[in-house]
Length: 99
Image 1 (tube, rainbow, N blue to C red):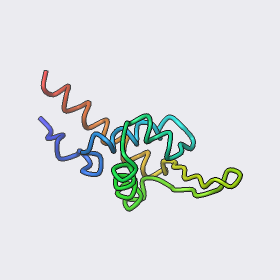
Image 2 (image 1 turned 180 degrees about the vertical axis):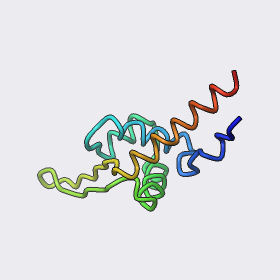
Image 3 (image 1 turned 180 degrees about the horizontal axis):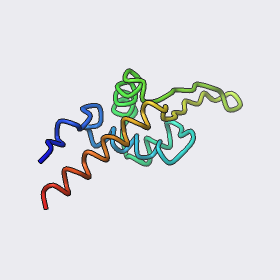
């Protein structure tokens, strides 16, 4: 039996990062406030996880203004999409292997 646990990506070990990536995988751009509300996080907690995903180049950050109000939005990169899909596939194989 193949050891699928070694194929899991450490960048996605956190439930918060799993949540962020899951939301970004099915949306084009998602703003900070929407992620914060959907995942029920504090600003600081969300910001630290976003920074970790950005460091891995798994997400893009877009800063803009809507009227005079600043807006920060996020999008998954192609590299992030591939890494997350591989992570999910490894999780699925791990679960299948446990049956």
